[in-house]
Image 1 (cartoon, rainbow, N blue to C red):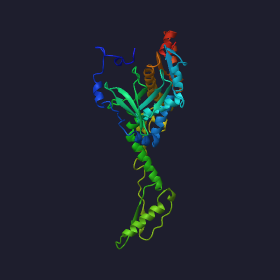
Image 2 (image 1 turned 135 degrees about the vertical axis):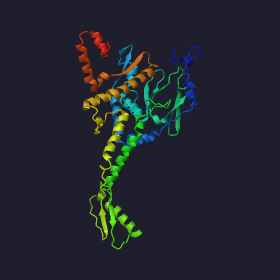
Image 3 (image 1 turned 30 degrees about the vertical axis):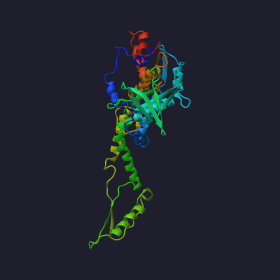
Image 4 (image 1 turned 90 degrees about the vertical axis):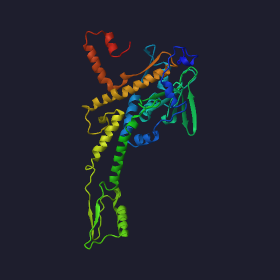
Length: 382
């Protein structure tokens, strides 16, 4: 049976279609739609220049990629299945973990991840595509009919095959106002990232100016005499050249008659500088779903200890992401590998071992359960 029956021939009278799909397609009219955000600016200001966002993306991507994907065929785990070998070595340039890390990282920074399958009948290689280079081309039914990949002034259009299978898998995070693209945590945290980056720039400026705000140079004259414009500019230039910057920190100032230095006691603490920077860091961690305790951000005691915070990170952020990836691959590769189901191997995650031990302890204490019932409730196959 073809994957998309309405493409195999004349539509039967009882064939069902989305009534809203054609209206969605009208917004694109078959043309490619660019991702509605400046991905390069987000990546530069967030991932490249912000240590909190950088660490969040790395933690999520590396943790999710460390959860192996296992293949079930006919309901039985099969590590020798062609799909399992493909996931273990998706292409000649990347291992399975490295390939998955790139996909998860793209989801966190762009909200979208694209995978291209290469092969004649069954996929022989899987390649991840950079999100900012991919455009979605909606079809008449409102769903993507093609993907366009552009780089260096050249582009290629990837369309559905004759049996309706799409060689590109588009994985995206939920977006409430876009039909075709996902919404990234990096964009949700953009304001907090700007605040955090601005705080870092302010701190750098303080260090460049001897780690304290500037004071006031007061000219005193008994006769009401004032500095001339030339004298004022010369004095300002001398202060900038001889006393500003880290190299001049602590250098004594020699003042002529009538000049007096009045320091201004406006410290970073007075401006609530540190507290504001930590608040911005916590907002960034919140957008990514990473407990601030794991990032060393002070002022947050949601969890009693590091172990609880780490378990919450895995259960609330990493495991749902790994399951999302496994489900998408199952539906996509299922069009080429018969009777295949892909799941993350959660038993191979050390961070979840205490929860598994507690579950087995409860099941063993339930004497009214049979061994088969215990195994089924623990999620262990035959």
